Length: 489
Ligand SMILES: NC(=O)c1ccc[n+]([C@@H]2O[C@H](COP(=O)([O-])OP(=O)(O)OC[C@H]3O[C@@H](n4cnc5c(N)ncnc54)[C@H](O)[C@@H]3O)[C@@H](O)[C@H]2O)c1
Ligand SMILES: O=CCC[C@H](NC(=O)CCC(=O)O)C(=O)O
Image 1 (cartoon, rainbow, N blue to C red):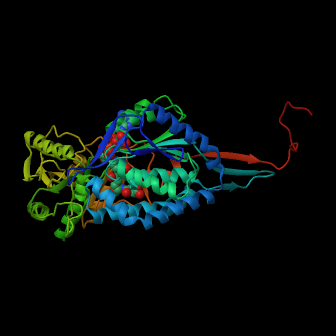
Image 2 (image 1 turned 30 degrees about the vertical axis):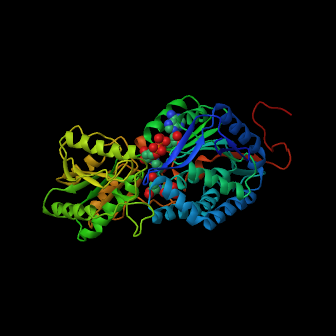
Image 3 (image 1 turned 180 degrees about the horizontal axis):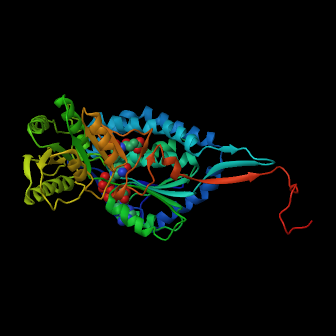
């Protein structure tokens, strides 16, 4: 008998599909096991969400917000326990997992503010009647989450969707079912009515069944560009469904004149190696000027990166980098590095798989300057590519040589360089003298090109959670003072 890991219509149920497991990627231990939701259970989850939709959507927003606040309170209360589960299941260090839970808590207040500011009611003056702009929920929406922030990123869709009055069917990453289950348990405890949030766990087949379900009105996806583009194709010709895609990037970080080399190296490391390089916003390409200043910066970067502490999420003292999500992902990074070296790259710091059976890898840096056929790939791990440039126009042309456009940054003391950089770079997050990771939930979060479909999340998530309704309302029916030509009464 497998555990009840599906949450449908307010009840925990055993999955009817194939059994799958979740592994602790630092210790190579099975930490969770459950059976996937099959197609019939996905149908039940969508039906439950539909049945709950009318009541939830037309409740006063204050009632919905009260439950969202109760959930945030429970997150606060269970912060250490939830952070522990996130660390165990993803491999990220406990200090960092705590910041993920803090972001989940912060999302409640930020989404409430965004709901009113972006989708509040507006009354426009009008002679003899009242004109309103209001917003309505779409109905039933599916939320798909990635493994790298198993709590925070699905939460970034679920909370605004619920505030707006939608009901949700949540399909988490199959690599992080344990965190999803615990999060939904807290929603249940917060008093969410049956059917308002449903959890369908499973591998790709469960995701496919949900994405293809005609009973959903929208799909909010955070994950890889490959999957996002498949969904985009699947939704082509269905203008009635709202699709929000938050995808990956091949993000450039450019350095020009910097006096404080250590501060620059710190910003580079926070950009490239935090979460073992498993953030969509991580710097993948570092553009450094040719010459002595650039050489000095790289030498310092290599020295500090070599000394980065990598280890188990619960080690004392804490590591900066924990394990990657799986041994498979770690091996993928070793292969990506070999690929770049085969193309003619020069290793400045070798990325190493530290322990068989685990996702533990050390950071790697490869100089790929001058490789014509450099793959425009998101290598989702701690592998940084260095490209040397001669002048800023060349740096910008290299930086923009990507089909993605999520995050980008400039490290520079020069105001003129920043003006030039900002004007020419193409990305949704563009920072100066700060890491390009750690985006604010109070700002829109999304990219251009293959990074998204112009439906930014975070502060702008409210926009894709509701549709606007324009109304002109008169208290009574009156004949107009003047009539259109050709009418006689
Ligand atoms: N832009 C952002 O906000 C953002 C944030 C975090 C992660 N990401 C990106 O996510 C990726 C890492 O996450 P991942 O590997 O979990 O992504 P993924 O695309 O493999 O999976 C995301 C979700 O989609 C589901 N899925 C996979 N294939 C599917 C299909 N054919 N039909 C329906 N559902 C399917 C998965 O089960 C999972 O729930 C990276 O590319 C990263 O850049 C983007
Ligand atoms: O892995 C991708 C997300 C990384 C993270 N971005 C955010 O948290 C966006 C803000 C939000 O959704 O509230 C980052 O930039 O580090």
